[in-house]
Image 1 (cartoon, helix red, strand yellow):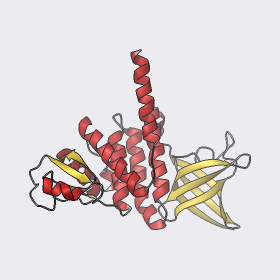
Image 2 (tube, one colour; image 1 turned 180 degrees about the vertical axis):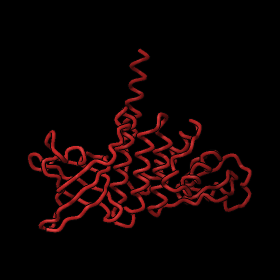
Image 3 (cartoon, helix red, strand yellow; image 1 turned 45 degrees about the vertical axis):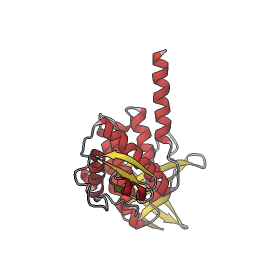
Image 4 (tube, helix red, strand yellow; image 1 turned 135 degrees about the vertical axis):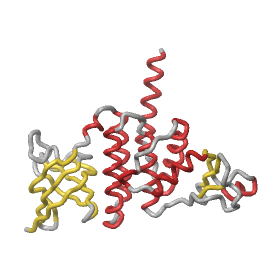
Length: 258
């Protein structure tokens, strides 16, 4: 029986047998690992906290008969701020779902790992709207996963001083609003120069400072629509956790107005 010590982010944790849990752990060195945490489903278990979904933990795994078992574990970061309200918790679940879907190899996992960790820290510590954090994460994940968009000037070369642009979902690039250019754009959304500059920042920023920015509420709304649509189209999946949160907010507003 061989053993391995490694730090990782728990992407999911589900019941296994009576008191165990099966966990999927994102690591830099080994991609996503599947392991059994014995007794983690039992209150007071030494693995109960470190095997929770969304926690960063240090693990010692034993390898036996082709499977990994948690021998020792210690929580490193619980991201306590995520549990302050349902918006942060929902946003974190959205991030973990995307991470789980795109980390299909060790190479991509090593790149996504710091982006996801920094995103969870940003959500945990922020006291403001979580939408810009989600947008930055979605755009960066698409960029490093091979779905990068061209955010340079419009091919016509006449858009340097324009205040609005068309982001083409068909061509994965921006165009100016001149009729001749829009005819090449296909399916597009008009966005402000502020939104374009934010997307450019997301593209070039390192994970450590990716979330160190501020935007207006108007630009935040633009970014949210662009990045979510781009993400869903390229991954061919409808990510609806944040939509469910919007429904809860709308319901609460209706209740308070009655």
